[in-house]
Image (cartoon, rainbow, N blue to C red; front, side):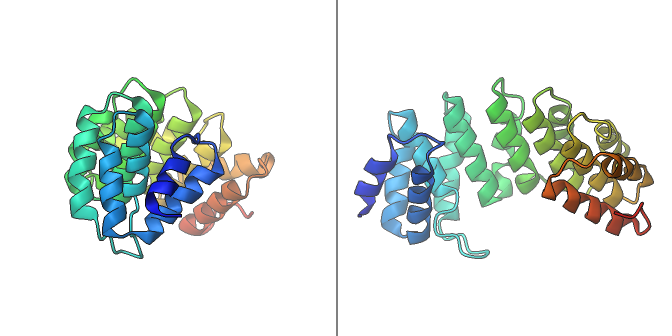
Length: 238
């Protein structure tokens, strides 16, 4: 199928439809100037489905390893969308795209979206902030800390993961991670514990003991436990 046929096939499909994402990935892999032009046109479309598809394609268009051949053309389009987009699901895709591009020039738009009223927008902002923020930026850290305390499990997990992976280390970050050690969702507690373990904080062992007493059967949680043990050196044996 040519580009226009692929776009026409993808537009009516929902986000939950695997075929939509297969088409998006096909367009990304082809990654030529014609697809960039088509995606840029979609980003200016009247329909939310058009703008969202355009942003999803630009997120990784032509990426191969560290190469981002359309970065400088895509970034201004996506930043403008982040400033003006009224549809929260489109904005969510835009923020994910900016996170994938990982360029610090998009930091103001991503940070501004961290306080959005829509859960999905805040999730995308929390996911993207670590990829675009200046190291240890106080406003970005504060935004992640705020989202890490939300009632929404997915938002809490995403922000906690972001905080855990930062190179910065201060009392505010450690306190935010400590506040998640007793989270009702074990994997969130494990992410927080890993963040503390990376900083040499032995309070992380609390979650390892919790896991040993009642594993959740999640392979990723077990991986986190192994990483915590590795960071601490002599944590309780798994």
